[in-house]
Image (cartoon, rainbow, N blue to C red):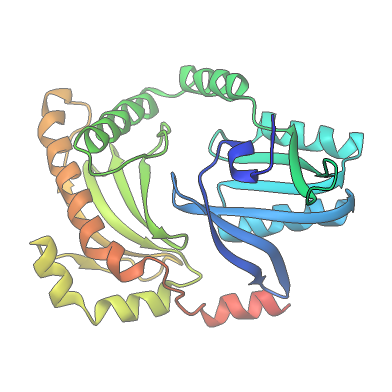
Length: 296
């Protein structure tokens, strides 16, 4: 597939976020937002033949930003780098997309020159779907239970029209819902060990301290909007911080699921409404530990 529009070429709905985005001592060429997932997309430009340096930087930037996609644009791709991108697409999680895009400049007659983007490597949907089915078949009994629970929660949230899109869940104890900030999300949990489900705001360690201080100052207003008292940073030894609401639950008793899912879907929407407007697009200060790590 080729096009003069890179987003259309990749079948992604992208919104520009920042050029020369600072990441530690480095700068990502372009950072965009995937409007379907509200997560970052790293775009690395190279106006010559591909090299290891740009590939390494793109992967580093994506890992720091917890990006959903890497787009590597270059005028010429070596066969080795094309194979590297194909290998990444075959082995990474289905949530992570990697694209190799060759840039050409076209001119017809005396018309203005225009860029043309040709995709030389992209995720293979059928490969990722097969991998997901294989992994699901190998899940433990508890993980299969959790996967079905999250699939039903996702269906409820989408059916109610409260969310336009949500990622496919995995067979694990948590399922995240984005709220407009790569460092902060709604972190839903369902655990058989502690017999409870929960809806939580997770503040990643990079911004945990500063974001918690700012949000805690609005505790009364937030709890009034949600309609319930929350647990604020109940596990201070964790590097991430949480603002939580829990409910006792026996996941093995599937007859209780409708009521549990009603409770969770309702709280996810309440959390989204209360927190998204307070964190979307906000650049909370990094912790001292994170700043020290970046400067090394």
